[in-house]
Image (cartoon, rainbow, N blue to C red):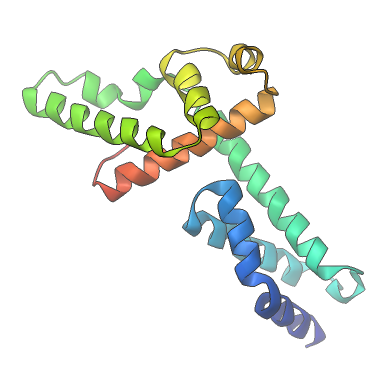
Length: 169
């Protein structure tokens, strides 16, 4: 019972801050809530969470690690050239398909304009200009990890905008 009490107290005291922290990292409110929930579930599965000396710090570190894992997985998935993402559209020459593709590209372009310059620049260089993460890293004077973060963040933002507009990326 003490375990549930500790986790309930952490939830009441820090859940809003935890979700906001994760949303900043992940760029998505729903993903932030999922990762926060997973962090609490990890605490529930621990044998004796009462032995943790700084439960808030432990919760945030666990959530940050889970968010980093998600971002890494996104970056691996985003390692695909842009043409592969739109292959079904590119294979269909019909005018209605071209019109829908043009509309989706407009949504993506507008979404990229909403992002910080470094984030959209990393996305364009990697996904559209087909530059490797290493090349983008050197060009932008960022670590490869930061380039992957920016590309993943931009991709998630573009997907969110496409979803809001009924698109499918």
